[in-house]
Length: 229
Ligand code: GAR
Image (cartoon, rainbow, N blue to C red; front, side, top):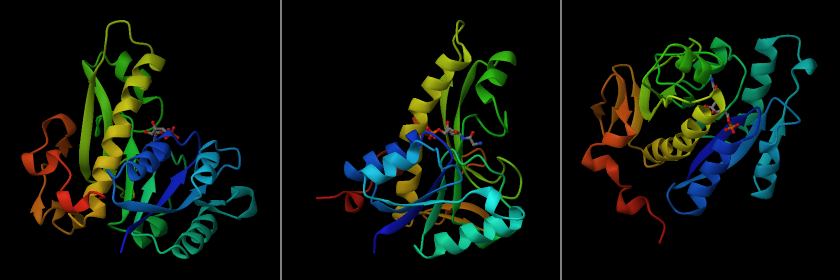
């Protein structure tokens, strides 16, 4: 059965678009079962609608607290029987109950080379810190904000004249490569989170995750049986 993704967004949804495009191109053997947003105004909702994907919007004003909001998310998402919950610019802190409910199935992309620069304004922080390189990370989600075991990262050099905007554009371009790639490992059953850590094909991965530009041979191309004919 096709691996079912639930994608959670709050904004533009360009990562969602990259996922939809990868599925359409046969690079990702999954389907997006549902897109959930906590913002009615999220432009990404239109991307989902255009692609014929079911959408859900939940407004925090309708719930007394985070726990109630997150229980509502769980109830809505579980109707779609997701195999993996994909956080793609979902800008809300998740309750421990939500994280526990989807333990091992909850994945996030963050615009920094984790564990560096958690939180917001990561591009600015990388420039201000004088970092020679910056990038993005995909990780399993734990209770810690932007924490949890790293799966893979992609790097970009920080250029002398970089502004927050130019740097974020180059990082985002790498996000669109990295996220579908990691999700394909999930979709083909190769990537799991075990008590002993992240496993790929039953083997532990490096603690800092894979580097997209230095993938081992068995990961550098998608397995033939995961490609669409
Ligand atoms: C992405 O750059 C993603 O890395 C970031 O939000 C952006 C969403 O863009 N996520 C975080 O900062 C999570 N801590 P998008 O809506 O166009 O995909």
